[in-house]
Image (cartoon, rainbow, N blue to C red; front, top):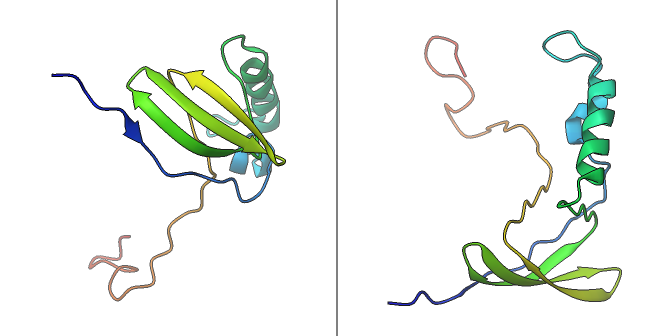
Length: 112
């Protein structure tokens, strides 16, 4: 039985922020190392790696295919580009969860 290609909805980057996310505001790592130096090295390694293409401020408007063999469409600044890829990492940023519903802030015993 042959699998049918899956089609997905689109994802949009709401704002263009520098690579590194919240690490950009950190001074030291948990090992007390210089976080900014480590981040700078990591970003350079990622951007210079031959098989990685970093695309910020881009919308993935269409995806179809099977695991390991995808086609998609990217949109950036009103320009469309068709791509073929086997892996995609969509990093949209992060925010910590701050629950506001009843009893989700405090659990008996004072733990979150």
